[in-house]
Structures are given as structure tokens and as C-alpha cells.
Image (cartoon, rainbow, N blue to C red; front, side, top):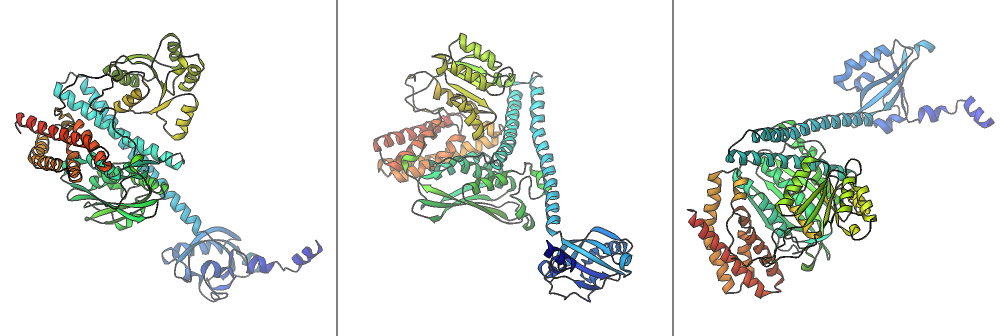
Length: 634
């Protein structure tokens, strides 16, 4: 303690506190001449010891802020103390750093016209504040965008619903219903974007590790944009590197989501020209392939000074882009995070008014044909088998009137026997007094929620506790799903669900036998409802698609038949592959499903007899379609 007192008494702390302290100390006279500075100027500003002595402090201030600084400095000369005066000071490397000084006026105590300036580097603080302000403005803009994007379809739905109540004609009804569906689909996209981002940022997003065929996935994605691209006159193509493994192990659903985002962006901002999807093998290991996918468009491009912002949350390249093209500004943020969470990378290059290329690289494990999951829709069952839901006994526990109407309408359409309950307590009573094959259980309900009702049912005696219970939930994160399963539920169906989703889960858990239908002709009738709906009943567009099919199919059909005769299955599969995207548009789902089976069998070469039969049936379907179009005047 005595040594410490002696240390303080002799002022030996001066070197540690002043000379070598973290703060920059200047002594400057009233005219701005630097009389002293400590050693910290070298670490912070880059100047050697004593190198600034004799220089004018004002000459080192950012010129455009000098007048304001001189006013603050002059004010400091009239005060005993002054604090928190911000300024920008010239560094040795010619950059400027934000500093802040607290001043002690030596005149008041020593009678000397000079100031001691205790300065601190606040560059990081200023940058953080600027970033916080920018982020705040971006979020405010995002909320304004989302508000607009949500209000627009809601207004459309409300308006169309009002028109439907005013006794419209059958044609008007179809138009209004199409508009309502389109608006609802837009609303789902916005909400899904927000939920996806929330799941990613909370770390609750899980990735699948399943086998998939990249060629099939790309075909499916390109198919889904075929109508839009034709309507805009944009050529949409893809190229797949033959060196890429036929089967990859990873998450095809997330890759599909990534590509849909990138292609829809490209379509949005491309008004003429083409969009090319190029898939290359970037890097190959013994077990892993790094797949590079470029999505290149000939659109409006992105300004160079905006490229570094387009992946940020809540932002687009320009506010005017949002006003003109719409969107929440979350799509590319989600894409970037989905890619990086799979240990991949994403980059972008662009030239204004010439086009943009987004490049993603994702590593996938090499798989085998046996690891591909069956993805065929339950709506397209094998031709010799048909599942009927008739008389399946369903209890629907749902407190929302509209959701209840939506689900029960579908159940009645499939000839199920459906009971409803508006809360968990009523559902529990109905289960005690009736027999059901499946229970569809909403999670959030008054009186008794879905979790409590499920636990009560599972605690009851057999056979009631064996009834499959399917959760209906808008919260579809992995944590929410785990909670549903932990409560005793057998599966989850996320809201909003499609008829396909509901049908699939009923087929999976329903206790019924597959019925054998009457053997009918395998010739598929043409159904143009999809094409008409997608084109808003644009007859010119519909005729263009059909005429193209009628003109080009005979040549393709002739080649397929010749390859069947010569048993050149690979060439035959190429032609089937080529025509497959058109089958959805002209309303031939069975033929398209047939095409998928042909592709699978060609790759495996395991059952040539079945392959030959399916190929001939495929040709029969095309012949039948051409004949039907002929009777329609095409």
C-alpha cells in the first residue's frame, strides 16, 4: 500500500494514463495550433509520435464540416468544460475517422489560452448507428410493402365475394372465382415467405436427406412456369451436365423452393428474350458432388451499387422496383440462407438493361436409384387400382367456420361421412359416442385445445385410443410438429392445405380397401380446364398451345414408335421426356404419369416388358388426343 501511495504521490501514473492511454490527448491553443499529442495518435490515426506538433488542428478536419466544427471549438474556449463534440479527423492513410472530444479549458485554471482535448474513436459507433438507421428504414419500407401486398389480394377477395353475391352469370362466376383463387395464392406466397424467414432466423428449419433425380426436379420446375413464360413470350430452357449423378441425396423440396424463387424473379424482370438454367458439375469427390446452377435472364438487370443489398432482409434493389413489380423483398434473402444452410454459396452478376445471372453451388451426396422416394400423387394411382374414400368416417374438430366449410365440402365431394366439432370438448364427447376412422384435430380451439383433446382420447380405452389423429396447424415448424407428435397425434397437416394434401393423409391413415373399378378404355379424354384457367380463358393463347401440340406431336410420335420397334429405349425416353411438359398444359395427367414411369424404367432397365407396354400405351394416348383435337376442329 505504501508503494502505491508513493507511486501516486510522484505522479508516475502519468505515462500509463496520458502518454500510453487508449484515449487520444491533444493540447491545442485557441487558434488551433497543436502543442502536444500523446502516443495513441499512431495506433488510431497512424501518425508517428510528435509528428502533428506545430500543425493546425483545423487543417485536419473534414473540409465540408469545418465551419460547424470551428463553431463548436470556439464555444469550447468560452467554457470551463465541454463534452461530446463530434468531428471527422484526417488519418495518415488519407481516410477520415469519427472522433469525439471532451475539453478542459486551461484558461480557467492556469490562465493559458489552450484546450486539452480528450478524444475517443467513435467510428464504429457511428457506423453502427448508420446501419441501425438504414435497417430501421428498410424494415419500415418492408412493412409498408407487406401491408400493401397483403391488402391488395384481401381487397380483391372481398370485392369478388361481393360481386358473387349479386347473381352473376355462370361465366362471371367462373371469372370471379378464378380471381379469388389467384388472390388467395398470392396471399399464401407472402405469408409463406414471412414464415420461412422466421423459421430460418430462429434456427428451426430442418433439411431432408432423401434421394432425388435432378433432371425430374428441373423438368417439374420448368413445367410450372411454362404458361407464364409462353404468355410473356420468354424462352425458358435448361441444360443438365451428363456428368451429374442420376441420383443425389439432399433436400429436393428446398432446392425446388430456391429455383422457383430465382426463376420467378427472372420472369418478373424479363420482358423479352430468354431465361436459361444451366446445371454443371462444379466439383466431384468420391461421395459428394458440388452442383452449380446458373439462372441467367435477359432482363432489366441490377445497378452495380445495388448488388450488395439484394440479399438483405426487407430490401429490394430500389423502392421503385417494389412499386412497379410488387413483392416483399424476402425472396432472395430466403434463397441465400437456404443455400448457405446447406453448406453452399450464392453469387450474382448483372449488367443493367442486359440481364442477370444468379449462381448457386450446393454439395450433394451421390446416391443410387434405390434411394429415390416414390413421389407419385395419390390422385394418379396406378391404372389397375383406384382408392375410394366413400363412407370413410371423419370427425373434424375446427373452430373456424370458413375452415370447417372448406374441409367438409371436400369430404362430402369424396363421399366421406363427416361430423364436426367446434372445440376439443365437443370432439371428445363425439368420440365417446360415435365411431370414426380418422380425426382431423385443429390445435388452437376454445374451451379445450387440440393437444388436451388428443391426450384425453389417447388415454381412453381401445379401440377409441387407436383412431388416427391428424393435427391441423398453421404452425408447421419442427418444434410445433414435435409437440403435436408428443401429445399423441399421428401426423400433421399444415394450413392452408390443398385438396391433394387432405386426400393424401386420408388415404395414408384411412381404414378401407382399394376397390377395383370397371375396366374402361385406357384412352384418356382431353381436359382443357387447367389451360383455360391458367390463361384466364384467353382463346388465342389456348388455340396457340393446342395448334402447337397438333403440329409437332405426329413427328415426335413417329419417332417414339420407331424407337420402340428398334428397342432403342434411351432414344425413346428422350422423346417422351421432350413432350412430357406439354401433357400437363393440355390436360393429360394420366399420360404424364405414364411418361414418368417410362423414364424411371428406362434408367433402371429392370423390366423391359413393362417398359414396352407402357410405351405403347403412351403412344395410344397421344393418338387418341390428336383424334380428339381433330373432332374439335384443330
